[in-house]
Amino acid sequence: MSIGTEKNAAEKQSLLPTTTVNSYDGKVENQPHALLGIACVAMSAVCFSLMSTMIKFNTYSMTSMEAIFWRSIVGMILNLGACLLHEHIDIPSFTCALMSFGGLICVVRPGFIFGYDHPTAETDGSWIAIGSALLGAIGQAFVFISVRKLKGIHFMVIVHYFMLFSMIGSLTYIALVQRQAFVVPSTPAVWGAVIGSGVFTFVGQLLLTKGFQLEKAGIASVMRYLDVVFVFIWDYLLLGEHINYWSVVGAVIICSCAAVIALRKAHTQ
Image 1 (cartoon, rainbow, N blue to C red):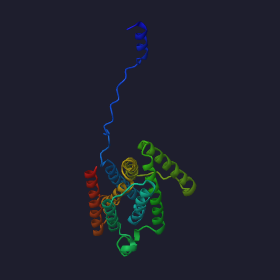
Image 2: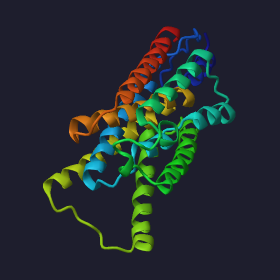
Image 3: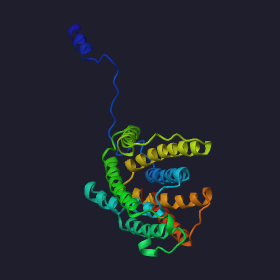
Image 4: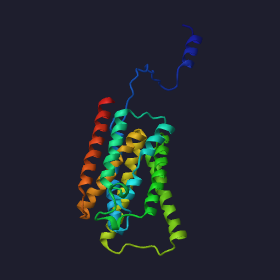
């Protein structure tokens, strides 16, 4: 081989070592577990239920379980998920969602179905509170859809801006609408409830955001029914409130449907 040929061969060599790219075999590495999405949403329900109980302990003026009923309506989630995200919800999962909604009705016992002659009728929320919760459910539905659209963004970034906007919005409302002195907790119990509600809100929002990034909006929304189940459990254990037998029936239905969805998800993925 001549000197010129060796020089050309040396010039064509890479300055840094290279690696050969193997052919793609169709296997995707580092995929999350099939149940991770709905598990995150289910755990967020536990956090949000504890948060609700602590807020109730803190103020004793929180909206009633009937308001939670309106807030927890996820039929809109199913519709928006199907229309905007083109996500297919299979028949068994949709059936479990409908049954869970029936269990939700048993848990919260809305007055227009069960009547208003019951021990907690005097403490039930007004129609203004229920309407506000319904508007909150509509906004929450669009938030969940937006989270699904932002799957490529780290969930911590989404939660950061969510908390930032919540803090600025609440301070603006206090300054412009409420126009009252900022109340500082005066007892250790109230301080514990305030700090606990903040911690569980943060952890629950992390789990909820990550869960909706991994799981379809319709399926993940069914797990949100567990929020209502845990609310009445914590109210009984921590606040000593009475539990109606209809709530027990509804809790069994919701938990059973959630278990069916989780088992089907584990076997089909």
